[in-house]
Image (cartoon, rainbow, N blue to C red; front, side):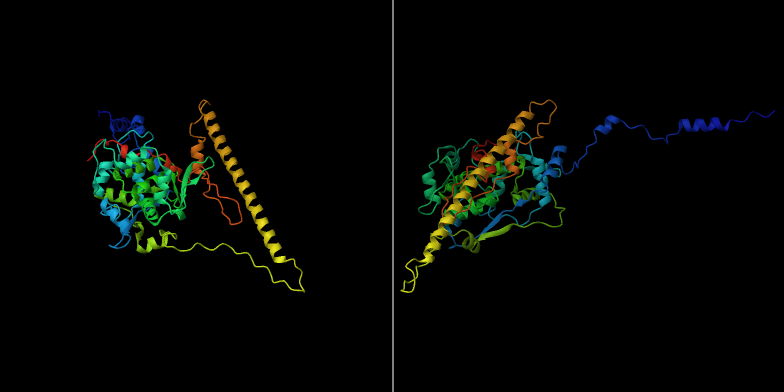
Length: 427
């Protein structure tokens, strides 16, 4: 009798039971460890989110200084004395916009308590004062050393002396409604002060508000004009850290940051590189920095009223043209006085808006499970919806009263950079 045949079904089951073709079940703990950002470009998910926030922001490229001997030597020689002509005023003419924004995203610190360094595409980029001074080939004072500019920054300011050094004769600071000095109009600056202002707006403390000199920047320009030594590496390091952490500010030092990354061997993958702004040269200074007062150019003459018509026996002794001129001037004076009242009213409404927003934010902090950042603070509201700068002037009347709100308010909150101690992990 033949032996019983092996069951095909049982054989199939054995094969299936021993097969390794089925995929193992996923480990959900391992899935939680998966990073949802580009780890090559960003050090954390916070940095990746920060990159998305700052992508729409524009850059403030630096300028070169190109002056020959004999051309504005007072400015040129002071640059050379400070050794700023070697690198700071002659940076490479290439800017990698994406790389710069990756740098600022990784440099962001929610609480500024770490060393001034960050990783960009796997490379450690330091931006502490010693690193920046080394790159710029400028002197790095010992930690704890107080430079003349740092000492001046922390001392009581003599605004009359500052105005005397920066302004043309007969001009001084504009005063706020409370009588405190708040800014110097650009047209009242000397030519030398305007040259240093133009350089500072791109290479020292980048900013796009270039019409007037705000209070904090006037201290910087005074230090430059009077030859005070300063720790430029600490100043720039402080400004970079401030820009990285602030909201809604444009990004400065793009050429310097690109060069720092290049020095660490980071290769650009951006097909198009941006360029520096036009250089500060003889043509630029003549066009943008020369004071009319110092050139002895007369100011535009005031409007001369029309002379009365000659009287004749056939005409009335009453001159209609003089009556029209007087009526016109009276109407214009009234219009600008009314405009001044409207401006003051708008300022009061603006301050009310800021106070309401700030109060709503404070109230929201006491609501359980209410996000702390859903309602802006008053400062964030002012930064996001800036108050317009300046107000109209007229020969017909209505004085100019500068507002206390400073258009360069983002500069005012910075600390004295020269007092910074040596950063950890310096090269």
